[in-house]
Each structure stands twice: as structure tokens, then as C-alpha cells.
Length: 231
Length: 215
Picture (tube, rainbow over the protein chains, first blue to last red):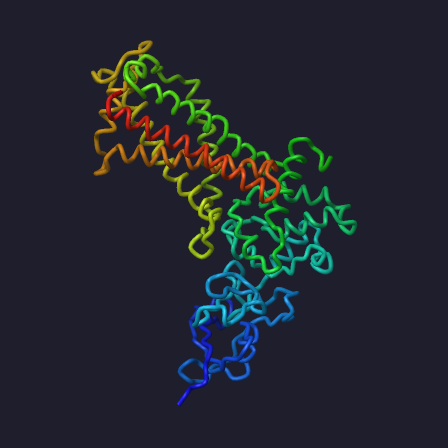
């Protein structure tokens, strides 16, 4: 008898913050056009492991499903990306899902990304709607993949620097350009970028992050050496 | 602003005292190339001076301290995200550690040893100080240290220095806002790679020449 095709999801789960992780392999029926997001939704309807035992529902952040919120970002087969844009048929099975590791885990695949928003506020990019002007969804993929960003580092990261650069040149934010440069000159600012340039490779929105970084490096150097922001 | 100047000083110390000194050392070593190299090398050997120790030592200490502080917070991930730039990021840090060890070893051979054993017949006198000779360096390079042939230690040290300087040059240019856009950065990657390869080729040839005894 032909068994219906299944998709295996190997998920790194945690009960709560600080709890030890455990791996669990879930199985869901395959269908055309499945993404990691829709696969996780299917798993939530009937959570069973690959050997057929019932398990608990996996906690994850569904977000919007339209690549506009970035809440569904996680590590999929070793790379930071958004679950809604990851096609199951293009991934190696079992598909390995882990929460972003640079942020505190809340439960299973949910992480606390408050730091991103705190850092955005530092450069006077208030999350909504100014962040949208920059095309950034604050998914955190660029930060997860950055070797210089992490819980032990104060580096602000590519997302905030890119957003700062866009707003510097936008009527909605140009007035605070000088304040942003001051923040980026300071501790944990743009000087901590290590130029590994992984950010631009993993950005789901394909934002020109390294171009923005280079522009802001020019702006901060000019401000620091010559004492003026632009000219 | 303090963080800004701390960073700029880090970049400048790598370029000017340290990078310039690396090139000067390799060019000094290049005297050993070709026929009559040993004599040419020995004639130019100068005794170490306190002034140079300060001009080089302080920037070196600063550059190393700042770099080690950066290293503490870093989480290399070129295994998960293998790209040329990400590997360069890892190698920049790895070569820094190699260089710290190599530099300590190099100083112990060319500075400390002549200071402690001024009467070694392999050394020569210059202005009252014992100074290294090509023959002394050949003797050092042909030896072994902790089971490692010293020739390998030097070849690895020169390779680490060439890479660290060339890649650091690229990174400095980006951080100073001189390389805007992917095309400029890629072109500069090629240019600095050429600088690194030239330094590597020169360094390895100097080591070979010193080992062969100026032949």
C-alpha cells in the first residue's frame, strides 16, 4: 500500500525561558505549495510525532503570512529566515527548526525580540510606521546571522543602521539625522560592525544592508573627523 | 565620541605603525635575496632602539587590546553561513591570534636572545649592541621549537601577517566610508588581495633566501 507522503519537522523545543531544550520530530501530511508556516499550522491542528504519538502544540509566532511582519523568523535548516517564505519542497528533510539564538527564548520557537525595538528607538526609528519606510520588518534575521551581534555584544546591528540611513534621507525622519549619527558613533555603534556581510545575504526583504552600512560609516566618519553631519 | 576615537585609533594603529613596520621589515629582509645577500643583509642590520620600541610597542599593545575586546563578543558562524566575506571575518580574527603568538616568538629570537647572549659568535656588533646576522637567522630557521620546525612557524607567521594586513586594509577603507557600494567594495577586495599576495610572496621568498644562505 502506498503510504501518503509526509513532511518531517525536527523542532528544538523548550517549555519556557531557561528550560533545557529537547528535539522532537513532528509529521504532517504533505501537500503542494507547503511552506514552513503552513506546515506548522498543519502541525498545530494535529500535533503528532513521526512515530505516531500525540504531542503538545508547538508554540511559534504566526505573524502575518504575507512577508510583512517578520514575526515568523526562525532558523530553518541552519539559516535564519522567515517561515512564510520558506518552501517545504526546497528544503532538506527532516526540516530542522530552531528558535533564533541571539534572543531570549520564550517557548519553543518564540523569542523575545524587544531588543530590536529598543535599538530602533535608540536611533529614533520608532517601530511603526517609520520602520516600514525603511522596508524592514524587524524579523531579526540579519542580527541572528551577524557574527558580531549577540547577547554578549552591545553592537546595534544592521537593521537599525539601515533604518537610520533611510530615515536620514526621508522627510519623515531627516530632522533627527544628527541624533542618529551621535548614537552610531557611540559604544555599540557602527564601529562594531565586522564587515562579515552575512546580514545582506539573509535579509528576507533583500534590503541593501551593506550599502546602508557603508553610507553610515561615511556619515559617522565625517561627523567624527570634521564635526559635521553632511556636506 | 570616545568610542569613535577608540575605534579610529584601532584602525590607524593597524595601518600606520604596524602595517608600515611589516612592510619595512619585509623590505629589509629582501636585502637577503640574490647573490651576496647575506653580506648586504648584515651590513644593514641596525641595533634595536628604545624609540622604536615605544613607537611600535604602544600601538601594538593598543591594537591587540582593542582587538581582543572585540573578539570576546564575537560568535563566528562561517560554518552555517559560508561566504567569502564571512570567512575573511573568521580568518581576520584567527590570524590575529596566530600573529600574537608569532610576534612573541619572533621578538624572543631577534631581540631578547641577542640581549641575553651578546657573545654568541653567530651575532655581530653594531654600535656596542649585539645584532642579528643572516647566518644567525639561518640557524634559527633551521631549528625546531617544541617539535615544530621554526621554518614553518615563520612561514605561518608571514602568511598570517600578509592576510591580516591586507584584509584589515579593506576593512579600514570600508569603515572610513571610502568604499560605498558593492562594486567599489569588490574592486577593493581584489586590490587588497593583490597587496596581501605580494607581501606573502616576498615574505616566503625572504625566508627561503635566509634558509639557503643568500644563494
